Length: 131
Image 1: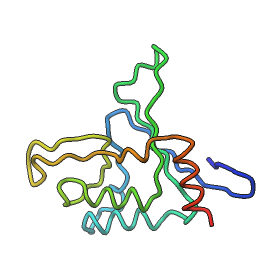
Image 2 (image 1 turned 60 degrees about the horizontal axis):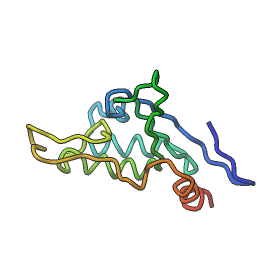
Image 3 (image 1 turned 45 degrees about the horizontal axis):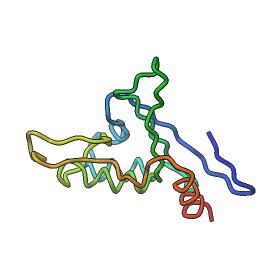
């Protein structure tokens, strides 16, 4: 998918989920640390790419509800994923999750509010990503 604004164009990679998280880097993990796998995923994207994260968890489509949508650059997502699980990193980006056990016990992973889909967010990404 692409978004065009005059002469400017953004490539959009759309990732959907119905369980509260987006598994983004599992295919990059073999033989790598979480951080290395995340960097590998980030680096596979072109500089003018953004990611649209679409979340269907707890959405009742039959009642006309719309999924929650977030927009972020691959680099922003990578940075967020490296902070996840109490700073240990993870292969899954979670919309909102509190860890109840393991090394991350008591930590909360949460999508930054600024990523929420809006005209302002789209304009920010056009000015940051497209030069």
